[in-house]
Length: 317
Image (cartoon, rainbow, N blue to C red; front, side, top):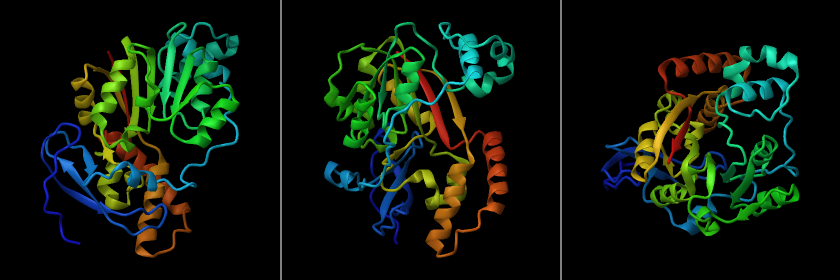
């Protein structure tokens, strides 16, 4: 395939972009090709031309996401309760004395990624799926709400008495300064127009509130190694892949300040990427045992190089 000649504008910072790669829908075995470009300003990677709403909807067949028939909240272990009570302000939790004694040994494991508690705080999860995370946050004491496009996901949430708006964020029409905490977990990469989306997130966040975003890292080591076969490219559903810099630029444009960023790496993404590479080459992907050692080495390398697969960014207003 010849390299596309057009020079599109980045939807994040509006700088010029250059051709990055072309990919297809490996997950569902479709062969239509989609072109992606990398911004010369912020290094975000995005699809061009950007599809319309009807085409985007076609990227999500009925079996794209499997929602559990229950949003049952996973039990919060006594050790995790003790860590959160000591480090994240969840002082209302009552873990046993033994857990409190051992909790300093597990601080990093159980505190990373958990937002600080705001007593009586209102929390919104955008793209809440089956509501399991909402249920966990409710169990931790938050006054929760969700937004979800999937009718199946909404039904599961409502069956668990979780208040969820069926639709996109803009259609929910929340009042300004509504939430102490807004979480956007693996959603923003699916958004064709990140500027108005971020503007709405900033509008509904209270002054001093926290916005937590999780999204694939366009600068991940795995992406550099695997190219178009990188699992988190998720062509064509992922429309914009961010870097920590591009995400921070986007947030700053809408009055949000970065307070924390960390990068997560797990074996899952690289193992699935290897499977994708083998599928596209027509080779068998049945042998996984040897690859697990490679995956552990990859996780170590990604962490050492600070090029993890997933960005976790926290912003405040």
